[in-house]
Image (tube, rainbow, N blue to C red; front, side):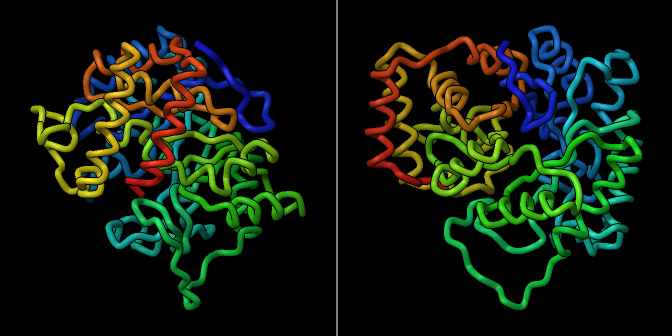
Length: 346
């Protein structure tokens, strides 16, 4: 396993991060425990979860993934071996029952969310606490273009950092990070920290895969120059880059089979782009999923690649992608395909 520095901290995290969002929905507690056992045994020391998991989120299942992680900590007694990341939800109509439904990043919500996560996770501290998405509307979650909403208000960044700083001083969290954030937002968070408002953001968790390279447009330079590396989520475009859905296939138990409510991944243009990348991988004798993951692993702004799996076999293959180094020729061919399929999946 390869380990990389988390932001400007002294923490070294595995370049492969264990994603957890299927636990408690597609995967049972036993499945989650087996995945954590295997990941840790194979050098993965970085795990990512969120208070809203599993996905798709529901009121009944809210927090269940954190509970599964917590039960593993309680039974295995290996909390000290793991760099643990979780997230607080932002404003969203789906979470009307969570803390009264007004899910802003104000003191009341942050304090309650951290305490609730600590209880579910059965731990005294969280290594990386992330803001799951901004309070303001941005181009994330399948939204390509930015649309401005002048009527929107959001908690001042300095105020948010002040509350997070109190949690750091109390020992409840160690570091803070962003998720689904823009270049403007990232720089404003960093500026507020530099002005003494609170802790500096150490990472940014955004969607990034062969068919969605929006991160490169403005955030790649920010990530490198400001040492706020990418934690890439959905690196296989919800499994589509494995090629398993091509030709209308719907494998039993697969995510798009169970939850067919992500049409952007099944649209004709997305399927054509998928076929092109899958064909390229097979031309070079590679597993398509491993090629897609290895490409992200090799990006100079990537801190960690968040993999998720619904089976142990998938997990094994995904973790093994760290050992695959793509040839310069293959990387050039990927770039040529990117010119044709620039952003087929926002």
